[in-house]
Amino acid sequence: MKKVATRLFTFSVSLCFLSASFYNFALDSDDGKYNKLQIHYINLGQGGSTLIVGPDGTTVLYDFGVKQGKSGLVDYLDSVLGGNKTINYAILSHRDKDHFVGYKDLIEAGYNITVANYEPDGPPKDSPLYVDNWTNITPKTRAGIARSIPVGLTIALGNGASILVAAANGKIFDGTSVKVSNENDRSISLFLDYRNFQYVLDGDLGGGEETCSGHETSQMDVQTEVAKALLNAEKIDDENGVEVFHVAHHGSESSTPARYVSRLNPEVGLISVGNPNCSYRHPRKDVVSMLLNKSSGDDEVCSKVTPLIHVFQTDYGSEKCSNETVGRETDNSGIISGDIILSTDGQTEYNIKTTGMLWVKGRKVKKAESQTFSMKMDKNKDV
Ligand SMILES: [Zn+2]
Image (cartoon, rainbow, N blue to C red; front, side):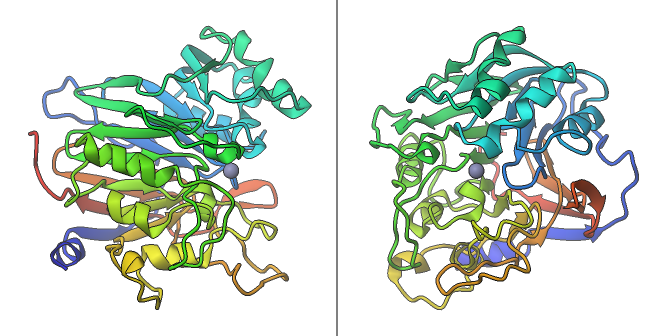
């Protein structure tokens, strides 16, 4: 309970109306040498894309969404990067279309990948969509053909910030593994560490079945094994956990079991979801309810989850669907955000801004409130 009480008093909210210069938020630093770490959780509908900009300017683009053309990934990156069309690392979480299709648009718009194009190890995929938008495009970049990402690889982001490749294709950085066959479970899991700030990003990685929350899935529980490895390696500590985590697989019940969340112990959850997705019915009610502690279940495992302070979702997800069915209900009690932009100095606080830019008839328009959230870090451990 101590942590719950702390959480309630460690954030503040301000509402603001944002101008066209929204993305160019200040990148000031204490010593003039390093900037803040930025995470752009971009609203591209169902698949999403995440741009990480390190304190030294290193750029990592994780997934590319399925949208193309006006208002898609290219427009967003143009506005953030101000004409610099260089991305250092491109990482495809797994080989499903909602994650890779936007890559071709990016390269054809003049963007170049300079260091590496990575994907998870796994059986080759030869669907025309995959080949046309990824396999045949990566060789056109300076980084060249996509390679299997090495599990355990560390990508330096400057000023002590780094990304650890925590898992891919069921292999975990501590040498353990989970046997996987579902493409989602091959998802690359990244662990970002910047002093007091920790973040996990893991595509559509599975969390297995769970009776206390009613999760039903054929996906394996790779997520909990990743969390255990991070705890065992003292990448995170069990009292304070991580600050922010990706609610995997668009809030599907195939992921995010309570046993995983209770180990990761996040303060903020981010969900990438498109509107509408009536066939998938994301995000699932039991997932969001568990994160925000709205469930009535009294199972001991589920009750160990400390309620998150906020859950943000990029769009409404399943809305106005005619096929609502018992056990597959959706939930839109997360903050409807549009693009979600996080920045932190890694020391005392992290800030989250939402643009309110939602998809309407194939275009992104200002449809939700823009908000700014200032979150204090739990503790100062290394600074
Ligand atoms: Zn997906």
